[in-house]
Image (tube, rainbow, N blue to C red; front, side, top):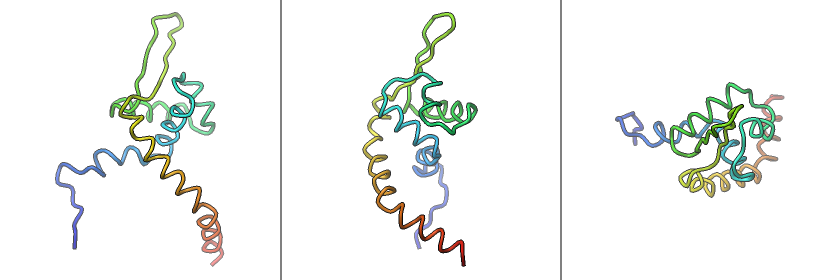
Length: 118
């Protein structure tokens, strides 16, 4: 039996776990599709994300070097977000995951409805 106990250096726990948030993936795909964006534009583009959740997700992405944050010295301050090279390198993987989800979504939704009735 293969174990997945935490040994202090686990790619799933340390790197991939923050990416598992739906907001994180939507932010990355939104920035990829639209290029550099302001906070309010990201929020409008995604639609149902709260300001707090968007802030937390953007900070996590920035911390991990997937998104950059640029503050312009203006009054009022203007802040823009964009994908870093590292963030851009993740997009092909996310696109494959999105393609998989699109392919199997009808079946999964149908099966969820069937299981709910049982």
